[in-house]
Image (cartoon, rainbow, N blue to C red; front, side, top):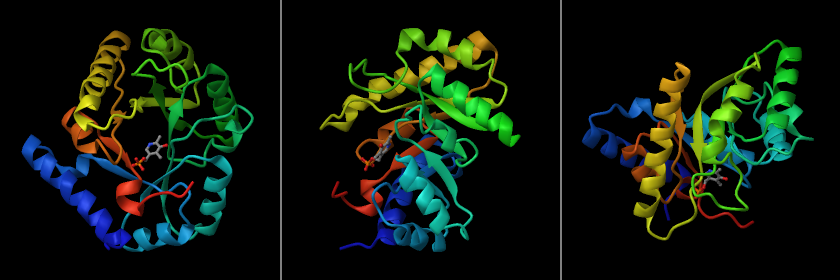
Length: 229
Ligand SMILES: *Cc1c(COP(=O)(O)O)cnc(C)c1O
């Protein structure tokens, strides 16, 4: 059985290999270790080893871990669904919020960020698979959404995020990753703004995601092992 540091190393090696194949530097890829449901001690273990990016899905769990790990200079990512009654707790507590998909939440984040005197970095979550129950803005609504949230001065839109439908075969995610990249490229041209980050790819398909242009990947199981919940 590999321990979590070995598992992290293995993921980093895979990233390194795909990057050399693509002629990219692995430093261009942010590996978010998705620590939801796993205890702070495991996060601390990876932090001591020199890993700084961690992703959480649930507001209360995340804030509790931030408190427990307050001595560690971690770059926290929020990647879970955002309920509007919890949104205010997110502003200023995460380096990046990946899962913005509602105007109401955007307005709450903006207001709280303004109060705190900060600018919150966010990504817009896009429902690339057009799944009914899935979070995310629909592809045909993204321009309209973007137009509205670009007016919010305390949010900085840094790019797009997606969670494709689960496929047994990771190659099936590839066209959806490509679609997200093309969407981003087109929005950059249309709005004349750079959207530098594409957050896509999880344990099963992060290689395909990097090949299609991801520069943030979110990996949980391959690092921490299976979750019981
Ligand atoms: C849980 C989660 C991940 C990590 O998934 P794994 O398959 O365990 O790597 C990535 N992104 C989001 C949004 C998640 O909720």
